[in-house]
Image (tube, rainbow, N blue to C red; front, side):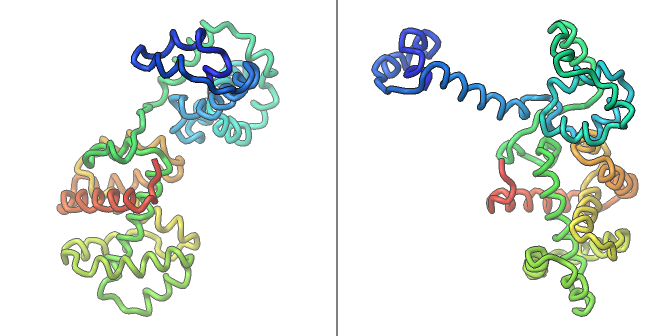
Length: 295
């Protein structure tokens, strides 16, 4: 597209020498320069969100930090945050702050040098980590590198798995009560998982029943229940708290607080943490193979 829009002589010098012949032989009639620039701009804007170091920090954490900044500084920071974060922030900032935010044109009038200083200072408030794809998660210690969406999918899957283990050899009536509260998809997943875990080691099945005793199993929102059970189960895999500090800001603060409660209770004390780590990695690989975790 670049060659056909801008010409071979303008583009060839920027390509690798090994492909120079391909570039020079290109004879496509493409977009005009203006149309080409429009397409490039649209693509850059589409990927801009992913390029921000804060793109994987839950915006609720950012709101908390912004409340300590002046409206002028907030306006400058909003310039480079991902658009989806900006929408959330503007909806959740206190009204007194929103009323005093500078006009957009004023925020863009700030010199680049000053913008970089403000940006660097603000980003240091967060322990950001570069995310990687599932193929790069080589062992359990790499799980914190998953992006927020994949983390939540993993936790909910672990929630279903923990329930399936806990309900082994339990009265069928109790299982039906929960199934009737679940969506068709989740109910079918739980029923299938109960068949899949039938041969699981008795010690882990017993441990799963203790997990369920700690969770408010009667809460109305079943998706939140699955997430909380998954967080409790994942906490039992950890023999130390290091990973929590790397994960917490990828989650909604409310979810992080629940996670921390289970971390304090289980991290470093569960005797089955190694077996549980193996179980988590097995589930992660299965989710990736099934395409349920997308990278």
